[in-house]
Structures are given as structure tokens and as C-alpha cells.
Length: 255
Image (cartoon, rainbow, N blue to C red; front, side, top):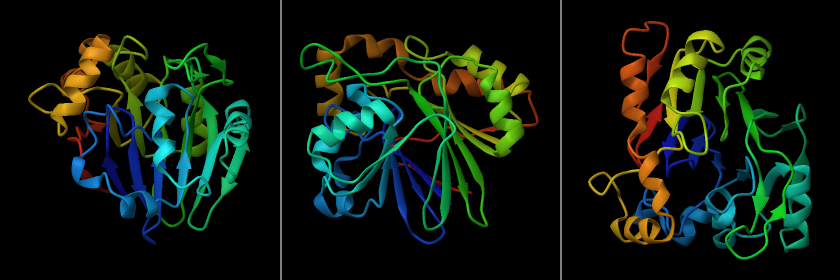
């Protein structure tokens, strides 16, 4: 299975069978989304989309994707999308699963808020935020935490699903920071690999300078969520059980 980082919280998971599963699409204003992928054949190559919650930096990219593509979302958010013209939405709630061709995906809790169209007017309540466990057939089990703070649910997730890889939020401000993520790794999870998530690139590391400049003007608080990947790696440098994989934007890693 391959993981490609396409932004602060957007990831593409490619199975052994070549199926593409996209988590939290955010294309415009995304300083981590490579310009070379902003083309129709990339959007058409996506087999299913998983949403962790309704905030604009996790769902606004749906506007570029064929509305008939399979979207998996929490119940309230799924109903909103169905009312907005998306025709192939599969609603889940915490503990529910969907079986696809080569992966079983279960929705698990995240400690975060969720609203929809909050940058366009009055926010619409979009249910609870979530994470996902991806159990790939004859392959790894991956836990994507979504945007979250620390929770003992992580220990239950580890014991029940036994993931060996985690994509774990660690940016601070809107999720737990590097210290919280390091605590989760040492005390709640038992994964072999962790990919730091929800961290933004700097002016030097962005792969989309125009988007970076626009985002800094529109949402300047992202400055507080830059380069936290390195802080998590430093905090876990002497922890031998888990390897921190810092993915560059547009970079692919194969497990």
C-alpha cells in the first residue's frame, strides 16, 4: 500500500490493486497540493473519497470531483452533501464500516468539531468529526486519526483493529500538538510507523507558492501550524518502537 501526502491533511492511499482512496479533498488554497496534479485525469482516477469532517480545508475540493464518485461521510455531513447534488454518498456513523473491493474501512471517533460552509456564511452543523481505520486485504492496517485531540479511544482502536501505521494530527491550534501526538504514540497506540499530519508547509517547503500566499492572506493563523512534523520526530527520536515518517508534500511512501 502506498501513501501520498497532498496537503496538510489530504492523503491518497493506493492499494495493491491500484485503487485510489482520497482522504479530505482540499485543492484550492492548498499550499501542499502539487500543481502538476491539478488536472482532470487525476480527479477521475479517484475511486472513493473519505471525509473526516465538514470544515472547508477538508471538503472544499469536492467541487472539482465528479459528483457521482463514491463519498463516505458521517451521517449529518452525508445528508448535507446529498442535498447539495452529490449522488453517491455512503453515510456512516461511529463504529460503522464499508467493505470495498480491497479494503474494509471503519469510522472511529475523533475529538474535534464539524461544520459545513463556515467560510461562506452561517456555518451548518455537520455532525461529529471522525477518523478511519483502513484494513487493507492481505496488507497493512492504517489508522487515520482525522483532526483530533488525545482520547482513550485511541487505545481501544489499537486493541481492536491493531493498526501498524497511523496518520496522526499534531499541528496544535485546532488539533493536538506534537507533545500530545508523542504521548499518544507512547501510551495509547502501538504502531510501527507514524506520519505527522495537519501541519502546513513554510514558504520554503511549499509546492504551490501562489496558494501559500493566498492562504496566508486569507487564513494567517496557519503560521502557527507549520513544520510541526519535525517537532514530533524530535520528540520521538529516542523511542525505538515507532518510526516517524515525515512526508514532503507530493511525496509517496510505500509500506
